[in-house]
Length: 80
Image 1 (spheres, rainbow, N blue to C red):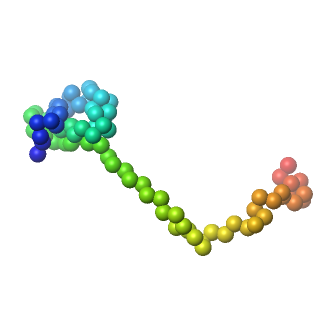
Image 2: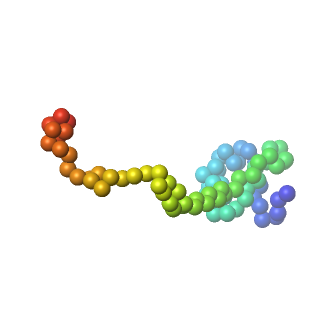
Image 3: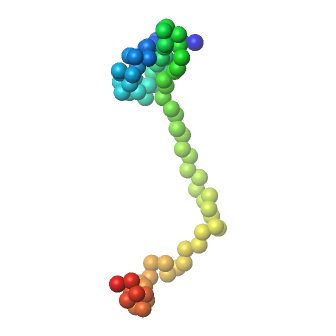
């Protein structure tokens, strides 16, 4: 289940050193958390890959040619 290079810490120690353990996990290290000498959880980095899909909404959105034109005077007086 765990190699010799995997750090094992007890629950109390994990609570006391959580920030440090999170930093180590973020750098790629696996940490096994034990309770009474028995492995109960693994702390490891999460890999989030985000891919951007271009053109996903193509044809669904229309922006008018004059969307950034100045507002008509009657509208300006209504909002001022």
